[in-house]
Image 1 (cartoon, rainbow, N blue to C red):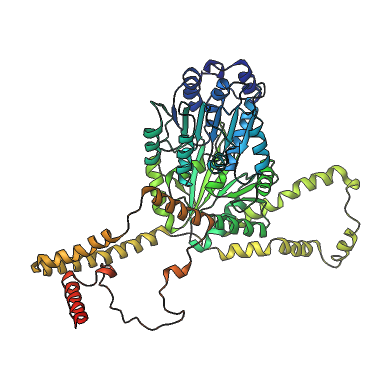
Image 2: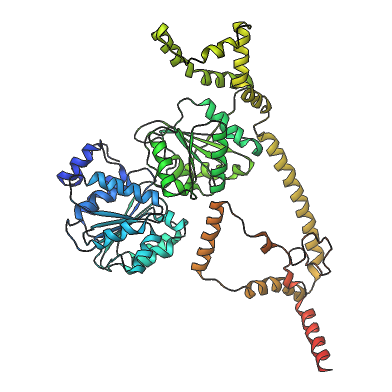
Length: 577
């Protein structure tokens, strides 16, 4: 990235430069430096790869506004985003960029009223449409959205649209648009299906890459706490209590975990907002408004719900467990340490997260520091210091106002309660009333952290056990070397037949099922347990008389081909009699 390049050097119009200056932008980010001149000067397909929080909206938004005509009967540009929040965020940014321009836009997103969207599209004076794939498909099917004269189709966060199961919708939209349109894509990662889409639908695209392999950010200090699973919540509250002026996001794995954690922290009097898919649009907007204005200092959400959150002054990101893929970790921690500010990424991990941590460290080619909780006594001191700090402002106000410092008239009743007690005894009672339960919980958490040495010994014992099993299997293999080749074919053939007998599924069907599973995980749902159970009545503990398949064999291949042949012959003779 060239620090000497300014927005004035990128070829933007005077009106856009004025809007950018009003926003306080000075030096363009790397993706902006590389993308804006290319998109302004060329009519081409384009692929930009950059991490979240690097200014991608301006990278495609500013050139797009330069290319739009102020008058048109049908939409000239369509921007697709994976979530409603991100689509609305993009629309807000476009509104700021086009402050001195005369363009009309409409947001078309799920969960929002159809009527204003339909009215805007029917007005015949919309140049730009910003929306989510599902709602765009609905409007296309209704005949309300006409893409026959579309000039620019932008796919923002393309990898996330793939992860959320919108891939087929995106393909339909591309196929239904003007074939001569320019197709622009921005994505943090490039999975195989995204590369396949580029090969199929893009025409000689220009590629721009901004070092997406770099996970580590010099402005983000990464660390983790390794704790026993039953103490994860307690570890989180300990971390929150130790941090002064916390303003950040806590990431959870599922929608249900987000709700549970949010309600639990609210019950413990933490000032939090919760963002998940079960909220209405009004509730989501209210939660985000409170968080952005600083009314709440903690936002709890999933990776999906966090799309579109654009807050530059976050001090911390906390991972309540690690995400399943390394790229999501990059997305998460990239929300702090922006615009030259120092940020902190803290992960609360249990035993199951250790292997994911190793993969992330391997990706960024650097270890992440393990933090240890202070001793109980020190933790208590930190807790009391933080809780009593709020009295400083009251004490200052009392000193300033002296006799004019007022309290409610019922204070006299409160004061009389303690007439017979000394000052120290009174403070002891108030202290216990305020802090006793919290301090007792700390006493119960002396054994909160996971001992890595114990884990290594456990792992070593299990490995020795597996090795012993391996030696036994080796002996079995040596004994069975003299068996017939037919027997070997029977063993392998059973597995082959099982594979052949399974109905083949298309890639799209597999993708749909995968996204279905992902959505269930996001909702915290499970399949109906009945689908996993046998037809026996509930509570029936009788053993089945059906012979069990040997270990390593499928149930359908319990009988060898020879045995099956004899059974069929016997059944045939029985029927002929």
